[in-house]
Image (cartoon, rainbow, N blue to C red; front, side):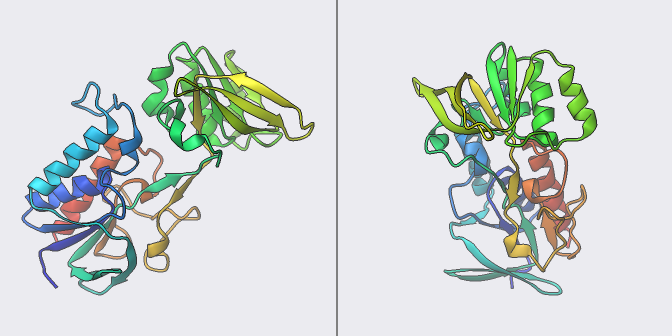
Length: 301
């Protein structure tokens, strides 16, 4: 074991920020990422909510983070992690290519948004389809948008979007929303939020490479209708990538890692950063903050 090694799983904003701070602390960051560095932000056409950037393409933003970490000496291993083995004073990461043992582990594998599973969906992400109202709502000012979901996040998104979009259609597959009663009362008082209940999205319309509408079906009657929409915000849940840590660290009922703002888990040398951590707000800035905190904690061991 190299006492300087801090192992990092995931090369999104949290993992890359952690790597930068680990290197600056005089330790050695070893980053595991099974796909391209950058995480989900790579697919964003434009980022306007990260301090210091008026506007930046998601892929460019991710590459700048990667370039900064690599320039400081961080080591990147492009392999999928198969197993994590904690010891009293070390953690081992195993891949198909071998194993590496370090002083600590920063787990920043992220979470994936649940999708509709429609054939047109992937190519319209970032071109009308979004998973983050706070990130992308400003791009739909004075336009018609839809929100798909029935929980607190969906209703919160609808309320947020109603302040800038001309019309917001809140689509949910059940007869009533699952969100808190207070939120349901709140949306009932917003004139440009239109509930569309007991309805599923069965198709997507595309015009000139961008989303232009939705195909809907009422579950009870079977009636099919169309809805013109410039944007679709999916709020049907997320799945944290935490299977590797089941039985090792404490997870909440949804599978997120229980860790405070200091990113410390119940295992002294394992830290959780970014979307895998149980928390209310998940943004680029909070991911970077988690990466910073985790690196400082890990480097101090």
